[in-house]
Image 1 (cartoon, one colour):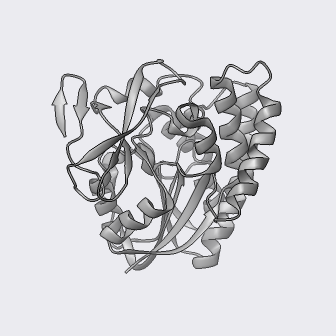
Image 2: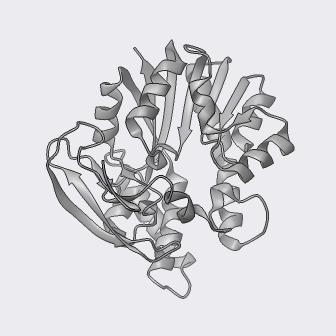
Length: 299
């Protein structure tokens, strides 16, 4: 990375370390600042990433909004209510997926937000640890559910080979240093542990439909824009074997709702509903949904 004041120009592909890129898309921060941003694609491995990006000290300001829902602890809005309803449905689905591979054990959730998923696992008898960089969300999780949630710096202090399952639900796209985080995951998981990663899929039908206004680009909070192929390449680099992929069908509706808002539709819910249906129908042919869950095994 090459830093110039508050902007960092990425010089190497975060996945394969190639230095040759091509422009992929021009867009902007539709959620908060309306600033323009560009997205590049690696000419070797085809990985897609935001470039340039804000400096690490500058990036937190792009999360500083009461409408940033994964950190929201109070208040009510229609979008927020939909988000929370989908979150509760997703929690049960996430637990079922993990149960398929590990019945019980030690669970690390990186990017645990306000703690609802950790609390659910804790109630089911799992030993749980959460990592959450946002102080308000972290404190809410601790105060509300009495669970173990720590700042990111704690990752370097956790026991090596200590976890049966490590999860990152819509988190990996936010991680500032991808290589460092993957090495930490590799170190913390047991040899037969599982890593569960959920990310938006930039090759999904709704991503192709909305293009620069696809809400799951979420520039510049999302630093990387994954596909099935790039996730598999990334996992292989850190000795993780992809076991299975699962769809997150509900995400197509929520992302479409936000995308329709970015298109300034007066009544975004109606076209978003039909867009979500259309996206899922098209995605079913190639298992290429708006967001995907990837289960990998440490080898």
